[in-house]
Length: 373
Image (cartoon, rainbow, N blue to C red; front, side, top):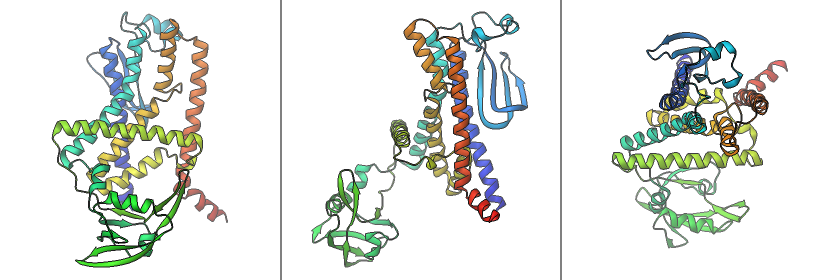
């Protein structure tokens, strides 16, 4: 029990620490590039456990509450700063004096660095472990059973992992793509599937399951094919594949958000920091490859979440700067302040909701009801 808890804590601290650091490093480097001095670079919130000042005057902090971080550009408060703070501003190095494009670059750099990290993690994984087979490669592979869904049509018919599907009703199956198309077009039908098992042919009668969708009924066996082995790739191809994989995850993230907003996916599926910590420990136990993949996925999630047009997030600030660029003047301060208050309330509400979701998934409330009963 204790080793599992320790692994979870260490893995979560590593994942969140690295991803937060990379995010804030993006803001920091972009600020330095655009000529903005950075007052503070903090990992975590609350009381600093460690702090030091570098040769350019930036104070670096590691704080007690490791649930985020921040970079404070010089003069970030703008005209709302106190007279004492304004008196200490370094001319030409304050954030609010920079052109709107420079401010947008500084804000955008954090999420972009998370997406770049994900692409590099995927690329490194592909370069070392090989690139996983694409959907086209899987469809072209021999239809060999890797696993079965419990209670599925294939499982009830007696199919086993390792079986190779040779024919359906006497029609030879050259690859998994052929099998998938034929079964999809046969919902509810009784078919005879010829499999090769331990060098011997067996004929299994199967009633194809019927799965209903908006496009009509589709046939399903409930088996997973054995994927082709990963293909070795060079560094350049691995990098291109890493960028492509990051793009696929980004598109899936947007699709998942839309499903949540439209109610296609229940809100109970939304997880927070506690579930990330739990999953960190689980994937760490599965090996380096799974752990790196998990880090890349969380890095994309962090980058995309911060791009949402919610004040208090990077996307909300970018939205204000876009309006400033279009209008030729900053958005009124009272509008920004109202937006930030609403954004803060929304974020705090989301944190509370996801924490309750996580605790519910862990069975805490079921246990409390049991104890109370």
